[in-house]
Length: 307
Image 1: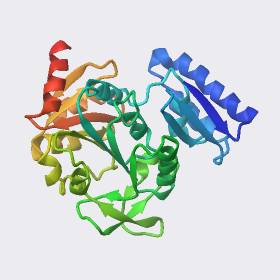
Image 2 (image 1 turned 60 degrees about the horizontal axis):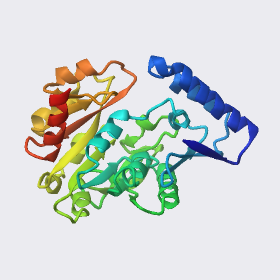
Image 3 (image 1 turned 180 degrees about the vertical axis):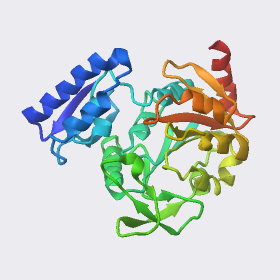
Image 4 (image 1 turned 45 degrees about the vertical axis):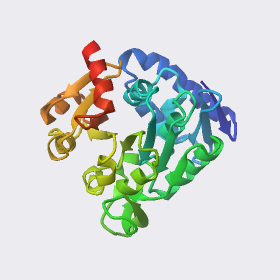
């Protein structure tokens, strides 16, 4: 992986080199401390300076160098959300469409739409205006191979919601009660997004990273549920009862799986199982929900048998 800075200066390169070294040193310990180091380094970097990382000839991803959330991605020793990468590898030969809901700057849209990712049909949805601007930039520098939509995911279409955006804490952003700190954002539903996937043979993969609005979003998902689909959702470590997983298991009646960092697949049969898998209260954990009958259960079930 290579990178470039704009503007390019000694300070920026020195901090990137520092992160790369720390990535190597912390790798044996699961990169513990790397996020905190990025947070410290980010304080000394200009918010106007950008970093672009290049994986392959057709994958480029740009972010603000002072953004500690993404800064750790400059090191080859750190793997960002490896469970999603494993899932995309497992699905590489499967015809899918990738709906990146809460896309942020579009990291997974870049990956899923790339040749290495299988060149999947990809639609990226982002509510925060600042994030959407970065998302648009990443789509442009990747030859517009994925569609970008500036909306908040909701259970009602063509209305507006109050949205709070915190550039220093991505997880703190989301739909909130109206206040002086919120902005109005137009809404879109999972039904509308599913209808954009016109090929009925495609498995619809939804990455649902909407910071607490998962249950609201699923209220308007009948068109999605009429298709073969799976949902990647986050159940945060600070939720000891794993209520989000309980929702997908017992309210939505879906099967739930967890992919470990090494690619091992585990069947999650209860919220208690999910709570056991969440080791840290400071981390968001991705789970996969899918129908009892469908492509995903067959693929992950086969991986489960081999585990």
